[in-house]
Length: 359
Image 1 (tube, rainbow, N blue to C red):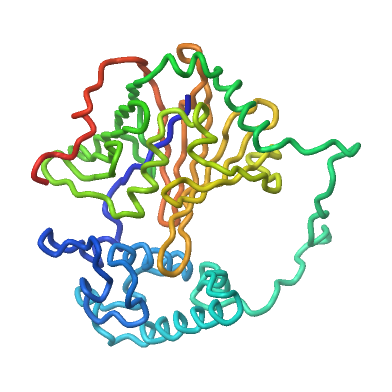
Image 2: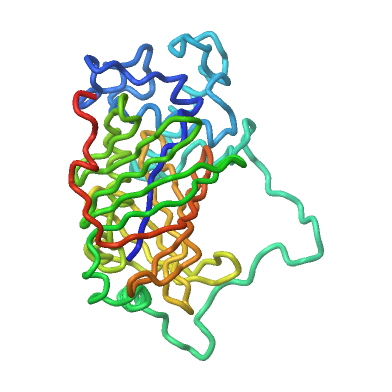
């Protein structure tokens, strides 16, 4: 049994800078220029993709919104950096169209790598150690690589096996969320096949993040809103109650990727894409067979934003192994959840996952 979560800790500076449109100005089905003012290079893109695109720019250049925008007037063209950003967007779009058949291979991160100044020269060697790792090759002795199906089967067995996993259909967890040196209580309720709600109790208020089996929502008990389409698609993957049991159905056409190191262990890596179009990379410990990391990607109009979830502290609970700790890392922050109490097969009504009425 495997659990993931998508939790919004607090409004980011970006969310405050680009306000969510009022209910009467719903973004569904609308383009960016129909909802926001003074849109030029992103004309024709979905309106709910604008904020993720701004997050991509912020992470790629290592800046905040005010680097390009006037506080309180994001539509203004007063700052030269905004005009330059538009020129760079047009440039990368042209490169991708002319050199990569329209596929988004080049983005602002390709050159900037977290700096306002793009990198145009390789670094010098700073030690006597070899500057390049040895090229990977065939495993010692010509041992054939493990296949994606074998990785999935080993993961299923390591998690407790299909029979034990099928016996559990709900789970209630309590623990702590740790972010920015602060710790607060959190509750997480899950129900098969794909319903989840987390409630964090921070600074005297309850913050909800949920997926009701069809769509995601977040906020408080008195003020909640639906996730954007991209957010909801990602939340649908996080809400899968039993990834080990249904891995091949959730991520069809699994492919083997190059082994990568996670916490000193060279892991088996497979990739796949959900029915909602969310690409994911999964890293498995070759010794235990358990999942130790998942990286999923959300498309924006200008590039993909990654979310990395690391799993640790696996313990046996009712015949299955689940992680009691996971760490979620985004381009704009990270937090960890430590589970302290777990109850399986408790009664959880579907209404537990529903967005508050009228919100």
